[in-house]
Image 1 (cartoon, rainbow, N blue to C red):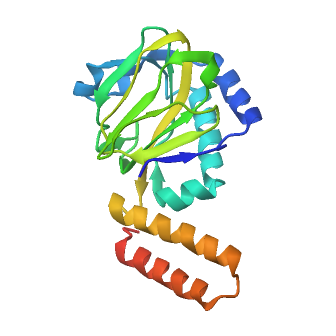
Image 2: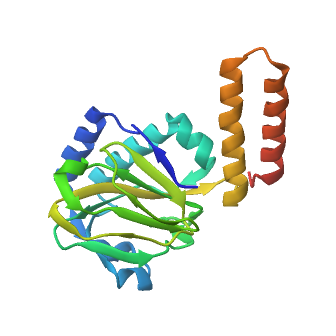
Length: 226
């Protein structure tokens, strides 16, 4: 499931995040990549140990918790602390699949990467190129969203960032360990959740709402790890 989630951050939050990142320490993005991904990765990334990275990451995670569409689609158990990257002219990230397990620095905690997310912090008109391209069974999907919007997709997907030719592309990336690890099961639960909302809005007193909600929670109980 490839899902566009609009307005995760407000315009004011985007501006605040960008101000924090302007003062942050930027390093070679290959420092946080696996061996194969590092061979095709050319970008810059905020040092995740810096106060600016932690504060900006907390803003993103708090916003996610207030975004019902994200919570319904991801069913998050753990969210890997957001990273922040920057692509300038000539920079790109070739085709790769994200690591299956991410380890938190200086922590024994590990996160299984069921879902990948890119939260755009630059407006589309600020740069040329830089599209995120995600491949699935239906072909290649090119993604370039307004600042504050996010794309959520299975971490098993082959994906890439095409070269930036003008301006700078700033984004946050992170991974989610879902309570439901199987993408097909998670997608069915999301579709059912959206259908329940539609039926509830149209006919709030319908006994069908109760029946559908019961099915949803019984399926979640059957499939959830937590």
